[in-house]
Image (cartoon, rainbow, N blue to C red; front, side, top):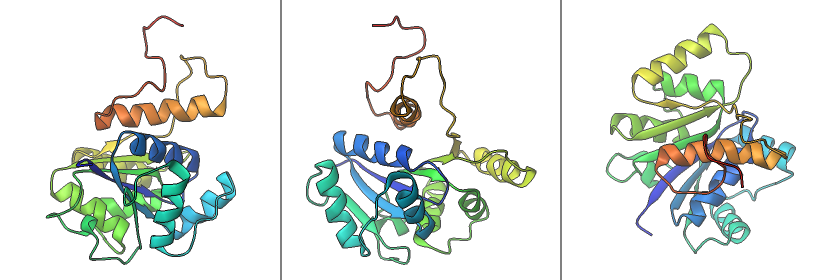
Length: 203
């Protein structure tokens, strides 16, 4: 298990995207460093009826059981766990996804505040010229939101709003979730068979 990635969840709506992405990353044999804000935990309870344990160690064990992950494959980190690998360019994974990504987190990353481990982890990926994907879920975007996202895009950050398409004729919410997760996996270079691709025949 030499592949590693950081997955961060914030307080924007879109918990189903994050959980499905986590499942796919585990299936692809990635070690996942998991960061979740306090607001993300509220969203998880509201949208998915999931109430995670209080400590990072307990969260890791809970999610490993949930997704059939190997021991140590999902590593939850506290928001002030500054000795976590994701806090340093010498140890952090080269890839990171913030899904869903709130506009407050977009602003913090765009301005390099690094007030918590999630923001610091994103800052590290940017400075180390790694791959950072943000999946914002907000509507409409204000000029402030757009300016912050433009700033990040010019730094090489991929801005991928949670806006699923319909050309694959989705029949369920799960189909819409898979559409977005498939696009994220495409950009990460991870093979999958979640959705039918554009131009391919049905069946």
